[in-house]
Amino acid sequence: MRVANASRLKHGMGTVWHGDKGWIHVDRGDVLEASDPSILKEIAGPGEKLLYKSTDHCQNFLDCIKSRKETITPAEIAHRSISVGLLGEIAMLTNQKIQWDPEKEEIIGNEYASRLLSRPYRQPWTLPVI
Image: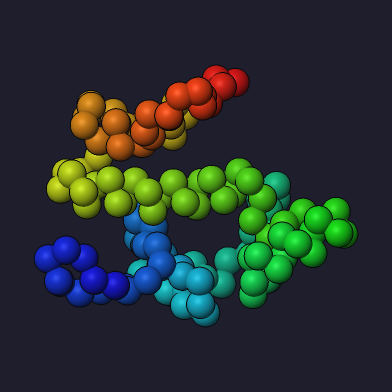
């Protein structure tokens, strides 16, 4: 993956999740890495959701329309997954660190970055507040 300054990123495609105990890198291929490889052997705990494997999201969606089975990426998981990438893009565009409030789904203390979360709709279109 190349960014505007033509530097190469260490992990290429995918997402790197940083936490208090290290990082995990995942992508759409078979890449799964972690700063502590033993964490990759952990099995989901009680109440955690395991997803089934799908190699084609579009076909999976069409298949699930017919079967009524839940898609590989339910709406909430898809929303949370893409949010990370969109927030990363906003950070790159503004060249600033951003703070995210996941409960309110708002960028904290950066009005310019916050405006990049959405754009005005052309009349007469609106997005209803639910």
